[in-house]
Length: 221
Image (cartoon, rainbow, N blue to C red; front, side, top):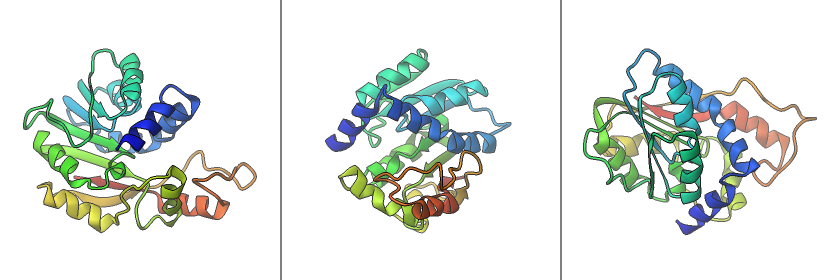
């Protein structure tokens, strides 16, 4: 876990960290569109990073905001955006700051696979979610997205590679039996072959194309 903290501490407040958060906007916006018309009166972001998702939710009417992240430096960045939010520096499997049935909505963007065993965190999410509350988790690193398989080596430490079916099973084991899997497809900001620059996360344009075609895995009720 210290490797994850070290990585995100190094990204906090940098161009890399901001670019990552902005790149998640399409995932956040898709979820906020799903929740349109709902009273998002108490929202928790699990693995909140620099607070970008909570900030976007606030702009469309989300009220009491809370977030948790292992990186204290990311939490410090989030506090700049969200001075009135409850932001906690702790692991995603430790939601002990909140009592049962606290949140109407829970969001998590590109975070849970950093836990080698995500089930305890999902159980905690289920515990703090109100009856009939809404949960939405977006994940780009999953078995069916072949392009993402190189990310573990790019990061340099183990992360949890699970299939859509396995992720759904974890949510059901945690008691969230109405959670189902779908995909979020990116339609804007897609790089052409000429614009593409190879990296350790996307070593070829063919893998980048597969990443776009696969979309992000959405686990939601």
